[in-house]
Image (cartoon, rainbow, N blue to C red; front, side):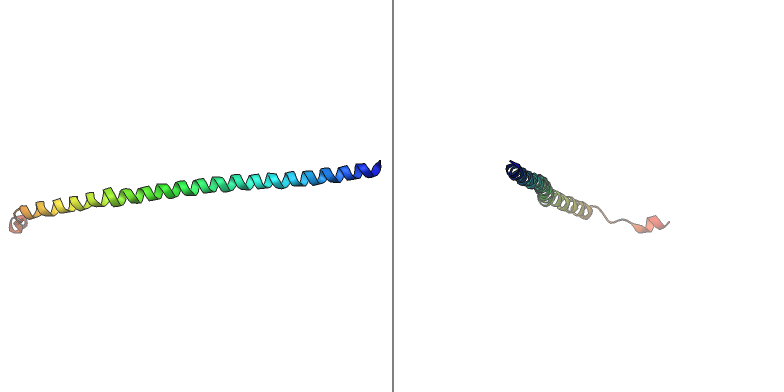
Length: 85
């Protein structure tokens, strides 16, 4: 009778060890999943900002500079002699 109890106790220890390993695997999976989702989300946000910069902000800046240069060419030169008086 004592031998069968020892075998059952060792079986329970093995089951407990397997459950502990599985629990650690689940923790790793959750941590890895959270890291992956965060990494991909940040990559998408950064990529979106780069697209916005390339497609929207740079052409707007170029058009503002171009407009400023063309307006400056249309204006008469500043008479500095009047400024020094």
